[in-house]
Amino acid sequence: APAETVADAAARVVDEVRASHRAVTLKDYEELAMKTPGVQLSRATARANLHPSFPCLKAPGVITLIILPDMPGARPLPGFGLRCAVAAYLQRRRVIGTRVEVVGPTYLEVAVRAKVSALPGVNKTNLRDKIIAGLNGFLDPRHGGPDKSGWPFGRDVFRSEVMQVIDEVAGVDYVISLALIAGGCCEPECGNVCLSPTWLVAAGQHEIEVV
Image 1 (cartoon, rainbow, N blue to C red):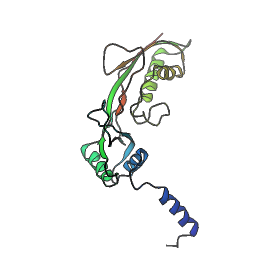
Image 2: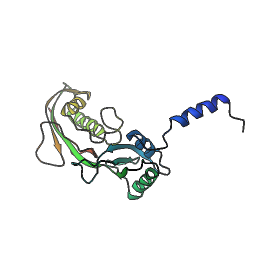
Image 3: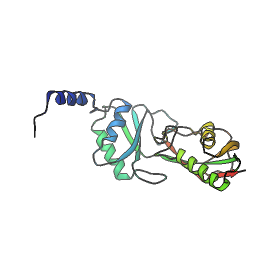
Image 4: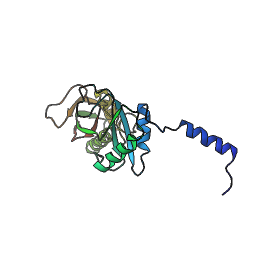
């Protein structure tokens, strides 16, 4: 093979200097988790001073890493072997005095109940299907969220954003009423849906009425 040029060597050194080999910051934990050999992750998020079994208490020295596997499905979850592989890889790179917990997300089902006014001449059945597809895409754990890069771990579902998703569907005139149903409950919520730090959302059975 031809010898490496000085310019290529200099660029490689810069990349090596910038690369993380030791988990010090939360970003280090996230980047190293994504580099775990033999696994494929969609996303990883680290939380400091949080133990997954005691989310309401402060746990000094504990780093909880929530991982999302790169696999199809409405609610992807990492298996035991995947979590152990990531934990073992981080164990050798963590700072002494810290404890690493690797977990998968807990899913909260969120459904939308809305009444929508359609523009004149629009097929109401097709419009209803488009609205449901748009809501499912927005609440998708791997490709949804405000920036369509996956729903952020622990991010609340804001009523205003859901209304915007519906309003942007072609053929919608305006939203008459809107409520969110969380966790499969029968009673809708008029406000936002709050999530714990290790939670993700999953789309439920939406109730959309088009008039």
